[in-house]
Length: 516
Image 1 (cartoon, rainbow, N blue to C red):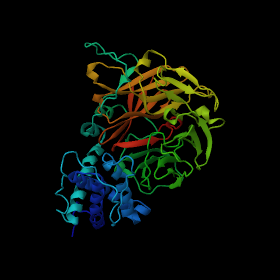
Image 2: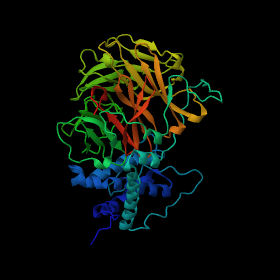
Image 3: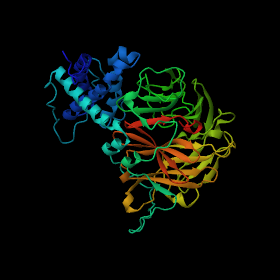
């Protein structure tokens, strides 16, 4: 007998039969609308269905006990589903035990309405429920696989969601170009639509021109280094190793929280589960940093030292989990990730900590670059300078610095995403955000890259430096991610790679690696 390709595996049917009633019960503890609650429970199981084929292929615990791995997916997604309804003073908990849930947790009634009852519960058999959920996940996979055919096809089929433009600082009124203007100001570039990005000329780099999740092997070799890690919401993260091949990360918990969590040499990936953790690419093992109590993601100062947020400043932590220096008064939210250092850090780690401070902190202060000559010394601030300074609003997300010389006082070049009060001619669309490149020593704004509504990206953000004149940026759509090179001297955009998933990613320091 030929098995129906859309029929769910027996193990998944059994999983749905055991988990669906419990999920419905748990979501209803927080959500008063039973129709929403019951559908949300099924949506959570659909996210498990997308991952289920991986559990049979991945080595280790996921293959031996797929239910345990699937339960972790449910727990991660449950909080996002119910958080708008939950009491902010109480911990959100998902109980998958057969016993009655905590009776102290009650859903907040909908105002002036009787409870809305669901007609879904009990109307389908467990096998039918599993079949319905499995088919939905299969349709999602088929829809996503359409973009594998090539760069041109990716540009045609990509559909994207439109972000809301970020607001400008209170009290500022951005100037507008004249209605007849069609020219961008000198030094200002615009990110074109995603479909056009995927058709840009390809530039050689340590990354391949295409990254396809389906080509990832599950047998992670030992002793290698990574060039990047790419994480899609409903699948295991994928590593690009220095052998040029793709491999699935064997631990489902490993996901980059920001573009700076991979060590510069590609040996480690920092991530958070119940604790702060490190995934060792060379050995495939995971280490717990049990002395780090912060919940925020770190950055790397060099291949063996991370920087975490801490009370009173930022804490330097070795890769073996041992805390070292506390960089007093240094706010990790303002520190840019240092790149371009071929040698390990020596001396005072404060020399690799450069901050980009926003305008208005304090109220009348300009945007500025802050550095320290020694730990606990007075900061040295340099205000942003040049005609493009007016295009820089509040900083957003993670930034990167690039060393351009041996002098530690010269922090090289900086890049970071920001809000912008600037406007561009109407044919380019409404401005959403910008990315600014700076010279650290003088504060000079070298160039600004503007994302508009016509870019049609979830987000455009810097992910590192390729060389002293080239910034790497990622742009996400619903079904793909594009990495492009932005020349900060010419404004030229070139294609680096297209990834056939909407991913969060982190790269090794590609500025110290040779091109392929």
